[in-house]
Image 1 (spheres, rainbow over the protein chains, first blue to last red):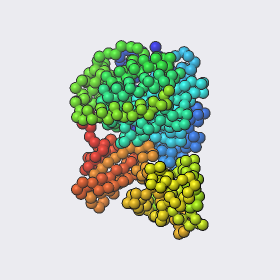
Image 2: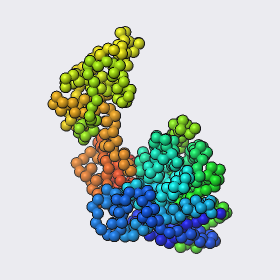
Image 3: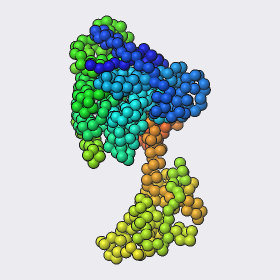
Image 4: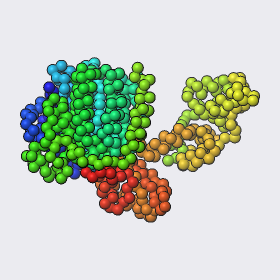
Length: 377
Length: 209
Protein backbone atom coordinates (compact mmCIF):
# COMPACT_ATOMS: atom_id res chain seq x y z
CA UNK A 1 0.00 0.00 0.00
CA UNK A 2 2.79 2.39 0.84
CA UNK A 3 6.55 2.61 0.68
CA UNK A 4 8.64 2.62 3.81
CA UNK A 5 12.00 4.39 3.96
CA UNK A 6 14.59 3.76 6.63
CA UNK A 7 18.18 2.68 7.01
CA UNK A 8 20.36 1.81 10.01
CA UNK A 9 22.46 4.94 9.48
CA UNK A 10 19.56 7.02 10.84
CA UNK A 11 20.70 5.91 14.29
CA UNK A 12 23.80 8.03 13.75
CA UNK A 13 21.75 11.22 14.28
CA UNK A 14 22.56 11.06 17.96
CA UNK A 15 23.21 14.02 20.27
CA UNK A 16 24.37 11.79 23.10
CA UNK A 17 22.90 9.83 26.01
CA UNK A 18 21.53 12.87 27.88
CA UNK A 19 19.64 14.24 24.90
CA UNK A 20 15.89 13.57 24.41
CA UNK A 21 16.09 13.10 20.61
CA UNK A 22 17.54 9.62 20.94
CA UNK A 23 17.75 7.04 18.14
CA UNK A 24 16.69 4.32 20.59
CA UNK A 25 13.15 5.47 19.80
CA UNK A 26 13.50 4.22 16.22
CA UNK A 27 15.00 0.91 17.26
CA UNK A 28 12.07 0.27 19.62
CA UNK A 29 9.65 1.14 16.85
CA UNK A 30 11.21 -1.17 14.27
CA UNK A 31 11.45 -3.95 16.82
CA UNK A 32 7.78 -3.56 17.73
CA UNK A 33 6.72 -3.74 14.09
CA UNK A 34 8.78 -6.90 13.57
CA UNK A 35 7.48 -8.57 16.69
CA UNK A 36 3.94 -7.78 15.62
CA UNK A 37 4.71 -10.03 12.67
CA UNK A 38 5.29 -7.46 9.97
CA UNK A 39 8.11 -8.05 7.57
CA UNK A 40 9.65 -4.64 7.53
CA UNK A 41 11.96 -4.27 4.57
CA UNK A 42 12.37 -0.56 4.11
CA UNK A 43 13.94 1.20 1.17
CA UNK A 44 17.48 2.38 1.99
CA UNK A 45 17.60 5.83 0.45
CA UNK A 46 20.89 7.52 -0.49
CA UNK A 47 22.15 10.43 1.59
CA UNK A 48 21.26 13.90 0.40
CA UNK A 49 24.18 15.60 -1.31
CA UNK A 50 25.66 18.92 -0.27
CA UNK A 51 23.94 20.37 -3.32
CA UNK A 52 20.57 19.04 -2.11
CA UNK A 53 21.12 20.72 1.26
CA UNK A 54 21.99 24.01 -0.44
CA UNK A 55 18.56 24.10 -2.10
CA UNK A 56 17.38 25.24 1.35
CA UNK A 57 20.31 26.18 3.57
CA UNK A 58 22.97 28.92 3.43
CA UNK A 59 26.42 27.83 2.32
CA UNK A 60 28.08 29.47 5.33
CA UNK A 61 25.86 27.45 7.69
CA UNK A 62 26.56 24.17 5.89
CA UNK A 63 30.29 24.93 5.82
CA UNK A 64 30.20 25.58 9.58
CA UNK A 65 28.55 22.21 10.25
CA UNK A 66 31.12 20.49 8.04
CA UNK A 67 34.00 22.21 9.85
CA UNK A 68 32.63 21.34 13.30
CA UNK A 69 32.09 17.80 12.08
CA UNK A 70 35.82 17.61 11.22
CA UNK A 71 36.60 18.72 14.75
CA UNK A 72 37.66 22.27 13.85
CA UNK A 73 37.05 24.91 16.48
CA UNK A 74 34.55 27.52 15.34
CA UNK A 75 33.94 30.22 17.93
CA UNK A 76 30.98 31.48 15.89
CA UNK A 77 29.24 28.07 16.18
CA UNK A 78 26.68 29.32 18.70
CA UNK A 79 25.69 32.10 16.30
CA UNK A 80 24.49 29.24 14.08
CA UNK A 81 22.68 27.59 16.98
CA UNK A 82 25.33 24.86 17.16
CA UNK A 83 27.04 23.54 20.27
CA UNK A 84 24.05 24.36 22.49
CA UNK A 85 22.28 21.90 24.81
CA UNK A 86 19.55 21.55 22.15
CA UNK A 87 21.95 21.07 19.23
CA UNK A 88 25.24 19.65 20.50
CA UNK A 89 28.12 19.10 18.12
CA UNK A 90 29.00 15.47 17.40
CA UNK A 91 31.36 13.74 14.98
CA UNK A 92 29.59 12.69 11.81
CA UNK A 93 26.75 15.17 12.26
CA UNK A 94 26.83 16.44 8.68
CA UNK A 95 26.41 13.00 7.12
CA UNK A 96 24.00 11.85 9.83
CA UNK A 97 21.72 14.76 9.00
CA UNK A 98 22.15 14.19 5.25
CA UNK A 99 20.99 10.57 5.63
CA UNK A 100 17.74 11.84 7.11
CA UNK A 101 17.29 14.50 4.44
CA UNK A 102 18.08 11.89 1.80
CA UNK A 103 15.22 9.71 3.02
CA UNK A 104 12.66 12.49 2.74
CA UNK A 105 14.06 13.57 -0.62
CA UNK A 106 13.97 10.00 -1.94
CA UNK A 107 10.37 9.77 -0.78
CA UNK A 108 9.58 12.93 -2.73
CA UNK A 109 11.18 11.48 -5.86
CA UNK A 110 9.18 8.24 -5.55
CA UNK A 111 6.00 10.29 -5.44
CA UNK A 112 7.10 12.51 -8.32
CA UNK A 113 7.85 9.44 -10.45
CA UNK A 114 4.33 8.23 -9.80
CA UNK A 115 5.15 4.74 -8.59
CA UNK A 116 3.98 5.35 -5.04
CA UNK A 117 1.12 7.22 -3.41
CA UNK A 118 2.05 6.88 0.24
CA UNK A 119 5.62 7.16 1.49
CA UNK A 120 6.52 6.91 5.16
CA UNK A 121 10.02 7.92 6.15
CA UNK A 122 10.80 6.36 9.53
CA UNK A 123 12.97 9.19 10.80
CA UNK A 124 13.55 12.90 10.41
CA UNK A 125 10.89 15.56 10.63
CA UNK A 126 13.43 18.27 11.48
CA UNK A 127 10.97 21.12 11.17
CA UNK A 128 12.77 23.73 13.31
CA UNK A 129 15.93 23.97 11.15
CA UNK A 130 16.17 27.44 9.63
CA UNK A 131 17.88 28.67 6.48
CA UNK A 132 21.09 29.50 8.30
CA UNK A 133 20.53 28.24 11.81
CA UNK A 134 20.17 24.99 13.73
CA UNK A 135 17.26 24.97 16.17
CA UNK A 136 15.37 22.64 18.47
CA UNK A 137 17.33 19.40 17.72
CA UNK A 138 17.18 20.10 13.95
CA UNK A 139 20.27 20.58 11.76
CA UNK A 140 19.04 20.30 8.16
CA UNK A 141 15.39 20.71 7.26
CA UNK A 142 14.52 17.42 5.55
CA UNK A 143 10.89 18.47 5.06
CA UNK A 144 11.85 21.72 3.33
CA UNK A 145 14.32 19.96 1.00
CA UNK A 146 11.57 17.51 0.00
CA UNK A 147 9.09 20.36 -0.50
CA UNK A 148 11.62 22.17 -2.69
CA UNK A 149 11.97 19.04 -4.85
CA UNK A 150 8.19 19.00 -5.41
CA UNK A 151 8.17 22.71 -6.25
CA UNK A 152 10.96 22.25 -8.78
CA UNK A 153 8.69 19.87 -10.68
CA UNK A 154 5.83 22.34 -10.60
CA UNK A 155 3.84 20.71 -7.80
CA UNK A 156 1.87 22.63 -5.20
CA UNK A 157 2.54 21.36 -1.70
CA UNK A 158 0.42 21.29 1.43
CA UNK A 159 2.45 20.75 4.59
CA UNK A 160 0.74 19.50 7.75
CA UNK A 161 2.56 19.53 11.07
CA UNK A 162 1.04 17.68 14.06
CA UNK A 163 4.16 17.89 16.22
CA UNK A 164 3.71 19.40 19.69
CA UNK A 165 5.85 22.37 18.61
CA UNK A 166 5.19 24.97 15.93
CA UNK A 167 6.74 24.03 12.56
CA UNK A 168 8.56 27.36 12.40
CA UNK A 169 11.44 26.32 10.14
CA UNK A 170 9.21 25.08 7.33
CA UNK A 171 6.82 28.01 7.75
CA UNK A 172 9.62 30.59 7.59
CA UNK A 173 11.27 29.00 4.56
CA UNK A 174 8.09 29.21 2.49
CA UNK A 175 6.43 32.19 4.18
CA UNK A 176 6.22 34.20 0.94
CA UNK A 177 5.67 31.27 -1.43
CA UNK A 178 2.04 30.89 -2.55
CA UNK A 179 2.76 27.38 -3.87
CA UNK A 180 3.20 26.00 -0.34
CA UNK A 181 0.44 25.84 2.25
CA UNK A 182 1.80 25.23 5.76
CA UNK A 183 -0.62 24.05 8.46
CA UNK A 184 0.65 23.60 11.99
CA UNK A 185 -1.26 22.45 15.07
CA UNK A 186 0.75 22.90 18.24
CA UNK A 187 0.79 23.91 21.87
CA UNK A 188 0.58 27.70 22.05
CA UNK A 189 3.90 29.51 21.80
CA UNK A 190 3.05 31.73 24.74
CA UNK A 191 5.25 29.48 26.83
CA UNK A 192 6.50 26.58 24.76
CA UNK A 193 9.42 26.55 22.34
CA UNK A 194 9.81 28.06 19.73
CA UNK A 195 7.38 30.78 20.84
CA UNK A 196 5.89 31.38 17.39
CA UNK A 197 2.91 29.94 15.51
CA UNK A 198 0.29 32.56 16.37
CA UNK A 199 -2.90 32.84 14.34
CA UNK A 200 -1.74 36.20 12.98
CA UNK A 201 1.13 34.54 11.09
CA UNK A 202 -0.62 34.09 7.76
CA UNK A 203 2.08 34.42 5.11
CA UNK A 204 3.38 37.38 3.16
CA UNK A 205 2.37 39.20 0.00
CA UNK A 206 0.75 36.90 -2.54
CA UNK A 207 1.26 34.03 -0.08
CA UNK A 208 -1.09 35.55 2.50
CA UNK A 209 -3.40 32.80 3.72
CA UNK A 210 -0.90 30.01 3.00
CA UNK A 211 0.58 29.93 6.50
CA UNK A 212 -1.98 28.63 8.95
CA UNK A 213 -1.43 28.12 12.66
CA UNK A 214 -3.65 26.50 15.26
CA UNK A 215 -2.10 27.20 18.66
CA UNK A 216 -3.77 25.25 21.46
CA UNK A 217 -3.87 25.86 25.19
CA UNK A 218 -1.54 23.89 27.46
CA UNK A 219 -3.34 20.72 28.68
CA UNK A 220 -5.62 20.62 25.63
CA UNK A 221 -7.11 17.15 25.30
CA UNK A 222 -8.01 14.93 22.36
CA UNK A 223 -11.55 16.21 21.84
CA UNK A 224 -10.55 19.86 21.51
CA UNK A 225 -7.57 19.00 19.35
CA UNK A 226 -9.58 16.93 16.88
CA UNK A 227 -12.34 19.55 16.80
CA UNK A 228 -9.81 22.27 15.90
CA UNK A 229 -8.24 19.99 13.28
CA UNK A 230 -11.60 19.32 11.65
CA UNK A 231 -12.60 22.99 11.73
CA UNK A 232 -9.55 24.13 9.77
CA UNK A 233 -7.56 21.44 7.98
CA UNK A 234 -10.18 19.94 5.62
CA UNK A 235 -11.33 23.32 4.32
CA UNK A 236 -7.77 24.58 3.95
CA UNK A 237 -6.86 21.55 1.84
CA UNK A 238 -10.07 21.80 -0.18
CA UNK A 239 -9.29 25.44 -0.93
CA UNK A 240 -5.61 24.91 -1.74
CA UNK A 241 -5.98 21.71 -3.77
CA UNK A 242 -2.36 20.54 -3.49
CA UNK A 243 -0.56 17.98 -5.65
CA UNK A 244 0.87 16.32 -2.57
CA UNK A 245 0.55 16.40 1.21
CA UNK A 246 3.75 16.44 3.29
CA UNK A 247 3.25 15.50 6.95
CA UNK A 248 5.45 15.92 9.99
CA UNK A 249 3.93 13.27 12.26
CA UNK A 250 5.53 14.08 15.61
CA UNK A 251 4.21 12.14 18.59
CA UNK A 252 5.02 14.63 21.35
CA UNK A 253 1.49 16.01 21.65
CA UNK A 254 0.80 12.84 23.69
CA UNK A 255 -0.07 13.44 27.34
CA UNK A 256 2.93 11.55 28.65
CA UNK A 257 5.51 13.49 26.67
CA UNK A 258 8.12 15.01 28.99
CA UNK A 259 8.67 18.20 26.96
CA UNK A 260 5.13 19.38 26.38
CA UNK A 261 1.73 20.07 27.84
CA UNK A 262 -0.80 18.79 25.30
CA UNK A 263 -2.82 15.78 26.37
CA UNK A 264 -3.58 13.61 23.34
CA UNK A 265 -4.14 9.89 23.74
CA UNK A 266 -3.12 7.17 21.30
CA UNK A 267 -6.80 6.96 20.29
CA UNK A 268 -6.60 10.58 19.14
CA UNK A 269 -3.45 9.80 17.18
CA UNK A 270 -5.17 6.88 15.46
CA UNK A 271 -8.05 9.16 14.46
CA UNK A 272 -5.63 11.84 13.28
CA UNK A 273 -3.60 9.39 11.23
CA UNK A 274 -6.72 7.98 9.56
CA UNK A 275 -7.97 11.48 8.78
CA UNK A 276 -4.62 12.43 7.23
CA UNK A 277 -4.89 9.62 4.69
CA UNK A 278 -8.56 10.34 4.02
CA UNK A 279 -7.76 13.98 3.40
CA UNK A 280 -4.82 13.10 1.15
CA UNK A 281 -7.19 10.88 -0.83
CA UNK A 282 -9.81 13.61 -1.04
CA UNK A 283 -7.60 16.61 -1.80
CA UNK A 284 -4.10 15.52 -2.88
CA UNK A 285 -4.80 12.58 -5.21
CA UNK A 286 -3.85 10.26 -2.38
CA UNK A 287 -0.24 11.43 -2.49
CA UNK A 288 1.33 11.81 0.92
CA UNK A 289 4.89 11.90 2.24
CA UNK A 290 5.25 11.44 6.00
CA UNK A 291 8.18 11.81 8.32
CA UNK A 292 8.42 11.24 12.04
CA UNK A 293 9.28 14.16 14.36
CA UNK A 294 9.32 14.96 18.03
CA UNK A 295 8.29 12.48 20.71
CA UNK A 296 10.38 11.89 23.78
CA UNK A 297 8.63 9.34 25.96
CA UNK A 298 9.91 5.89 25.05
CA UNK A 299 6.74 3.99 25.99
CA UNK A 300 4.65 6.33 23.82
CA UNK A 301 6.46 6.97 20.57
CA UNK A 302 6.89 3.34 19.53
CA UNK A 303 3.14 2.80 20.00
CA UNK A 304 2.05 6.03 18.26
CA UNK A 305 4.30 5.47 15.25
CA UNK A 306 3.35 1.80 15.05
CA UNK A 307 -0.24 3.00 14.75
CA UNK A 308 0.88 5.42 12.03
CA UNK A 309 2.62 2.62 10.14
CA UNK A 310 -0.32 0.21 10.39
CA UNK A 311 -2.84 2.86 9.32
CA UNK A 312 -0.61 3.96 6.45
CA UNK A 313 -0.22 0.39 5.19
CA UNK A 314 -3.93 -0.36 5.81
CA UNK A 315 -3.11 -3.17 8.23
CA UNK A 316 -5.22 -4.15 11.24
CA UNK A 317 -4.29 -2.79 14.66
CA UNK A 318 -3.59 -5.48 17.25
CA UNK A 319 -4.96 -5.06 20.75
CA UNK A 320 -1.95 -6.27 22.71
CA UNK A 321 1.74 -5.53 22.69
CA UNK A 322 3.97 -8.58 22.14
CA UNK A 323 5.40 -9.84 25.44
CA UNK A 324 8.95 -10.31 24.05
CA UNK A 325 8.98 -6.66 23.02
CA UNK A 326 7.80 -5.53 26.46
CA UNK A 327 10.47 -7.65 28.07
CA UNK A 328 13.26 -6.48 25.81
CA UNK A 329 12.54 -2.79 26.37
CA UNK A 330 11.34 -2.88 29.96
CA UNK A 331 14.29 -0.74 31.09
CA UNK A 332 13.13 2.13 28.85
CA UNK A 333 9.38 1.57 29.03
CA UNK A 334 8.90 2.05 32.75
CA UNK A 335 5.93 0.78 34.71
CA UNK A 336 3.17 2.77 32.95
CA UNK A 337 2.98 1.12 29.58
CA UNK A 338 0.37 -1.58 30.26
CA UNK A 339 -0.05 -4.51 27.87
CA UNK A 340 -1.90 -2.87 24.98
CA UNK A 341 -1.05 -0.94 21.86
CA UNK A 342 -3.41 1.82 22.95
CA UNK A 343 -3.21 3.80 26.18
CA UNK A 344 -5.04 2.44 29.16
CA UNK A 345 -8.37 4.24 29.49
CA UNK A 346 -7.44 5.15 33.05
CA UNK A 347 -4.06 6.67 32.17
CA UNK A 348 -5.36 10.22 31.83
CA UNK A 349 -7.63 11.44 34.63
CA UNK A 350 -10.40 13.99 34.25
CA UNK A 351 -8.67 17.37 34.07
CA UNK A 352 -9.91 20.53 35.73
CA UNK A 353 -10.36 23.71 33.72
CA UNK A 354 -11.49 21.81 30.66
CA UNK A 355 -14.42 24.12 29.86
CA UNK A 356 -12.30 27.26 29.93
CA UNK A 357 -9.69 25.62 27.72
CA UNK A 358 -12.32 24.47 25.25
CA UNK A 359 -13.75 27.97 25.05
CA UNK A 360 -10.34 29.54 24.44
CA UNK A 361 -9.42 26.95 21.82
CA UNK A 362 -12.71 27.56 20.00
CA UNK A 363 -12.12 31.32 20.14
CA UNK A 364 -8.69 30.90 18.59
CA UNK A 365 -10.06 28.75 15.79
CA UNK A 366 -12.88 31.15 15.01
CA UNK A 367 -10.52 34.15 14.99
CA UNK A 368 -8.20 32.26 12.68
CA UNK A 369 -11.02 31.33 10.29
CA UNK A 370 -12.26 34.91 10.36
CA UNK A 371 -8.88 36.23 9.21
CA UNK A 372 -8.23 33.63 6.50
CA UNK A 373 -11.73 33.87 5.05
CA UNK A 374 -10.78 36.75 2.76
CA UNK A 375 -7.66 34.87 1.58
CA UNK A 376 -9.31 31.53 0.86
CA UNK A 377 -11.47 32.52 -2.08
CA UNK B 1 18.54 50.44 25.77
CA UNK B 2 18.73 54.09 24.76
CA UNK B 3 16.46 56.21 22.60
CA UNK B 4 19.04 56.47 19.81
CA UNK B 5 19.05 52.67 19.46
CA UNK B 6 15.36 52.40 18.66
CA UNK B 7 14.40 55.81 17.20
CA UNK B 8 13.59 56.24 13.51
CA UNK B 9 15.70 58.39 11.21
CA UNK B 10 15.91 60.31 8.97
CA UNK B 11 12.78 62.22 9.88
CA UNK B 12 10.29 63.58 7.40
CA UNK B 13 9.29 67.08 8.49
CA UNK B 14 6.90 69.80 7.32
CA UNK B 15 7.01 73.62 7.31
CA UNK B 16 4.48 75.53 9.45
CA UNK B 17 3.45 77.43 6.34
CA UNK B 18 2.70 74.28 4.33
CA UNK B 19 -1.01 73.60 3.84
CA UNK B 20 -3.06 70.98 5.69
CA UNK B 21 -3.73 69.48 2.25
CA UNK B 22 0.01 68.89 1.78
CA UNK B 23 0.25 67.36 5.27
CA UNK B 24 -2.69 65.09 4.44
CA UNK B 25 -0.88 63.88 1.31
CA UNK B 26 2.22 62.96 3.34
CA UNK B 27 0.19 61.14 6.01
CA UNK B 28 -1.69 59.20 3.38
CA UNK B 29 1.12 58.35 0.95
CA UNK B 30 3.83 57.57 3.52
CA UNK B 31 1.68 55.95 6.19
CA UNK B 32 2.91 58.38 8.86
CA UNK B 33 0.93 59.48 11.89
CA UNK B 34 3.29 62.20 13.19
CA UNK B 35 5.08 65.07 11.45
CA UNK B 36 7.56 67.34 13.26
CA UNK B 37 7.09 70.92 12.13
CA UNK B 38 10.36 72.76 11.37
CA UNK B 39 10.87 76.43 10.67
CA UNK B 40 14.38 77.56 9.65
CA UNK B 41 16.00 74.55 11.33
CA UNK B 42 14.02 75.02 14.52
CA UNK B 43 11.43 72.55 15.86
CA UNK B 44 8.25 74.57 16.35
CA UNK B 45 5.56 71.90 16.66
CA UNK B 46 4.25 68.43 15.89
CA UNK B 47 1.27 67.71 13.65
CA UNK B 48 -0.44 64.35 14.14
CA UNK B 49 -3.02 62.73 11.90
CA UNK B 50 -5.42 63.07 14.82
CA UNK B 51 -4.79 66.85 15.02
CA UNK B 52 -5.52 67.06 11.32
CA UNK B 53 -8.73 65.04 11.53
CA UNK B 54 -10.04 67.04 14.49
CA UNK B 55 -9.10 70.41 12.98
CA UNK B 56 -10.77 69.65 9.65
CA UNK B 57 -13.78 67.72 10.93
CA UNK B 58 -17.16 69.07 9.85
CA UNK B 59 -18.22 68.45 13.47
CA UNK B 60 -15.74 71.09 14.62
CA UNK B 61 -17.11 74.56 15.43
CA UNK B 62 -14.74 76.21 12.94
CA UNK B 63 -13.38 73.54 10.61
CA UNK B 64 -10.04 74.23 8.97
CA UNK B 65 -9.80 73.79 5.21
CA UNK B 66 -7.32 72.26 2.81
CA UNK B 67 -5.50 75.56 2.28
CA UNK B 68 -5.06 76.50 5.94
CA UNK B 69 -1.47 76.36 7.24
CA UNK B 70 -0.03 73.53 9.30
CA UNK B 71 0.62 76.05 12.09
CA UNK B 72 -3.14 76.37 12.56
CA UNK B 73 -3.54 72.75 13.64
CA UNK B 74 -0.18 71.71 15.12
CA UNK B 75 0.73 71.05 18.76
CA UNK B 76 3.14 73.53 20.26
CA UNK B 77 5.33 73.67 22.29
CA UNK B 78 6.72 70.16 21.87
CA UNK B 79 8.06 67.68 24.38
CA UNK B 80 11.24 66.04 23.10
CA UNK B 81 13.67 63.30 24.04
CA UNK B 82 17.46 63.23 24.10
CA UNK B 83 19.15 60.47 22.06
CA UNK B 84 20.91 59.27 25.22
CA UNK B 85 17.76 59.05 27.33
CA UNK B 86 16.95 55.51 28.51
CA UNK B 87 13.97 54.10 26.62
CA UNK B 88 11.97 53.69 29.83
CA UNK B 89 12.25 57.44 30.57
CA UNK B 90 10.93 58.30 27.12
CA UNK B 91 8.14 55.75 27.62
CA UNK B 92 7.15 57.33 30.92
CA UNK B 93 6.88 60.80 29.38
CA UNK B 94 4.81 59.49 26.49
CA UNK B 95 2.52 57.58 28.82
CA UNK B 96 2.11 60.39 31.38
CA UNK B 97 1.31 62.98 28.73
CA UNK B 98 -0.54 60.59 26.39
CA UNK B 99 1.79 61.39 23.50
CA UNK B 100 2.09 59.30 20.35
CA UNK B 101 5.61 60.45 19.60
CA UNK B 102 8.65 62.31 20.85
CA UNK B 103 10.95 64.13 18.44
CA UNK B 104 14.56 63.34 19.41
CA UNK B 105 16.79 66.40 19.72
CA UNK B 106 20.57 66.42 19.95
CA UNK B 107 21.00 69.99 21.17
CA UNK B 108 18.99 72.04 18.69
CA UNK B 109 19.23 69.42 15.92
CA UNK B 110 16.36 67.03 15.16
CA UNK B 111 18.06 63.63 14.85
CA UNK B 112 15.14 61.17 15.01
CA UNK B 113 11.64 60.41 16.12
CA UNK B 114 10.35 57.91 18.66
CA UNK B 115 6.78 56.60 18.35
CA UNK B 116 4.58 54.24 20.32
CA UNK B 117 5.28 51.59 17.67
CA UNK B 118 9.02 51.87 18.31
CA UNK B 119 8.33 51.26 22.00
CA UNK B 120 6.38 48.11 21.10
CA UNK B 121 9.36 46.96 19.00
CA UNK B 122 11.55 47.64 22.02
CA UNK B 123 9.23 45.58 24.22
CA UNK B 124 9.47 42.65 21.81
CA UNK B 125 13.25 42.93 21.73
CA UNK B 126 13.45 43.21 25.52
CA UNK B 127 11.30 40.14 26.00
CA UNK B 128 13.27 38.17 23.40
CA UNK B 129 10.08 37.00 21.75
CA UNK B 130 11.45 37.54 18.25
CA UNK B 131 13.84 34.57 18.52
CA UNK B 132 12.97 30.86 18.80
CA UNK B 133 12.74 30.41 22.54
CA UNK B 134 10.64 29.14 25.40
CA UNK B 135 9.36 30.91 28.50
CA UNK B 136 10.32 30.16 32.07
CA UNK B 137 8.57 32.04 34.86
CA UNK B 138 10.04 32.00 38.35
CA UNK B 139 8.96 33.60 41.62
CA UNK B 140 12.23 34.54 43.32
CA UNK B 141 12.47 35.66 46.91
CA UNK B 142 13.32 39.36 47.12
CA UNK B 143 16.81 38.79 48.43
CA UNK B 144 20.30 39.60 47.10
CA UNK B 145 21.82 36.76 45.10
CA UNK B 146 18.60 34.93 44.18
CA UNK B 147 18.75 35.99 40.54
CA UNK B 148 22.43 35.07 40.45
CA UNK B 149 21.57 31.62 41.80
CA UNK B 150 19.04 31.17 39.00
CA UNK B 151 21.34 32.33 36.21
CA UNK B 152 24.24 30.29 37.60
CA UNK B 153 22.01 27.22 37.43
CA UNK B 154 21.31 27.91 33.75
CA UNK B 155 24.92 28.77 32.99
CA UNK B 156 26.09 25.47 34.46
CA UNK B 157 23.83 23.72 31.95
CA UNK B 158 25.05 25.95 29.11
CA UNK B 159 21.53 27.26 28.48
CA UNK B 160 21.55 30.63 26.72
CA UNK B 161 19.20 33.34 28.03
CA UNK B 162 17.64 35.50 25.30
CA UNK B 163 16.01 37.88 27.73
CA UNK B 164 15.25 38.32 31.39
CA UNK B 165 12.59 40.56 32.90
CA UNK B 166 11.79 41.02 36.54
CA UNK B 167 8.99 42.85 38.28
CA UNK B 168 7.60 42.98 41.79
CA UNK B 169 5.05 40.25 42.46
CA UNK B 170 2.75 39.69 45.43
CA UNK B 171 4.35 40.07 48.86
CA UNK B 172 8.10 39.71 48.87
CA UNK B 173 8.45 37.76 45.66
CA UNK B 174 10.05 38.97 42.45
CA UNK B 175 8.44 37.65 39.29
CA UNK B 176 11.15 36.76 36.81
CA UNK B 177 10.39 35.86 33.22
CA UNK B 178 13.15 34.40 31.09
CA UNK B 179 13.12 33.51 27.43
CA UNK B 180 15.55 30.65 26.95
CA UNK B 181 17.17 29.22 23.86
CA UNK B 182 15.97 25.78 24.85
CA UNK B 183 13.46 23.20 23.75
CA UNK B 184 13.88 21.42 27.09
CA UNK B 185 12.28 23.89 29.50
CA UNK B 186 10.05 21.35 31.25
CA UNK B 187 12.92 19.09 32.39
CA UNK B 188 14.86 22.25 33.32
CA UNK B 189 11.92 23.43 35.42
CA UNK B 190 11.81 20.11 37.24
CA UNK B 191 15.51 20.35 38.03
CA UNK B 192 15.05 23.93 39.27
CA UNK B 193 12.18 22.83 41.52
CA UNK B 194 14.37 20.12 42.96
CA UNK B 195 16.87 22.88 43.71
CA UNK B 196 14.25 24.83 45.68
CA UNK B 197 13.09 27.37 43.10
CA UNK B 198 9.42 28.35 42.90
CA UNK B 199 8.68 27.78 39.20
CA UNK B 200 5.37 29.26 38.05
CA UNK B 201 5.67 27.98 34.49
CA UNK B 202 6.00 25.28 33.26
CA UNK B 203 3.71 24.10 36.03
CA UNK B 204 3.64 20.42 37.02
CA UNK B 205 1.27 18.45 34.84
CA UNK B 206 -2.09 17.86 36.50
CA UNK B 207 -1.77 14.14 35.82
CA UNK B 208 0.75 11.48 36.70
CA UNK B 209 2.83 10.02 33.92
